[in-house]
Image (cartoon, rainbow, N blue to C red; front, side, top):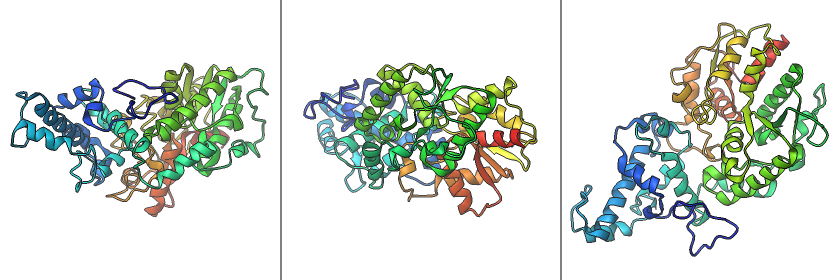
Length: 440
């Protein structure tokens, strides 16, 4: 973005174009409007997972700090009658002092936004969901991250390996790209690749976690088995698939995101697919919503939506409900960001004995697992771990099964329940719950 407008990264001039936001004037008109319209109600702060676990990020204070900084600079520039915000002195002197402050940095640098606050954001969207005046806190945080990453090369060190892996291997873990199809080995039915299958209803977007991460591979195999059982024709891209670019975009590396996204858009157009089913909400969100900017407009469904349809139409029938109690965790990028709340619950209510034991914070008020915003690839060293906070809420329901619809959530909640010593509690995907129920 440059002055709030998209720029062509291939033809950008670093001396003229601004990548992200380095000073308050770089925000778009919407950003400046947001800073001026905050009602200071604190709803965003009360729902923020970072703030609730002792981290320095308050969405409310981010907005108010940017507002005060913008007003102070404007005051000196125009010698206007804008109210002085918590300071004394002449407007010109005040503006001069404000102009020296870095937008992002440490307390010692007198920065407007604290470095640790900027990197504590999981982009879960709880702040945006709660705001009565539609302030888009997450977008403004990512705008500031973009400058820090692309110009200053200033970001948590452990995320560097993730970005290098995305560039060199096309996945965050650096796994060999030619092993993307390995999850198909041992299945009792063939999994056709695009090009092998003449006609297919769904392109199954496996995703990096679904192809390389051990727990997520179980979900991938479960979904493929269920689709095969229901007679749904599908195909995969196999080794032609690469990361959607979600972690790169959320961390602020727009260049890597654009590189991966353009490659995927071209591949998807060539595939001839009309509908895509994805197991990862981050892939689901990126392909369904953000690839439209690059000219790809295609129907994308989450696997829980497709499974709910197959159960409803009688193509999959649970025969033995899962016992021991079950609770469901709403993934942020499936629920709050894309409003998919009902389908996973429809599946689970059919597949679990007694239905779902709901947590207090659910649906649009669900509490984040802590992995979004590329936090999956960064250490969490300040305050209480977000995944522990959420898992404690799940364990308090007494349910022996925690169902999820996201590979990141699965990893985070599994790690937290293990750290709590809850060995008798299982964290599994909705698809695995359904598969057990129909295979029993």
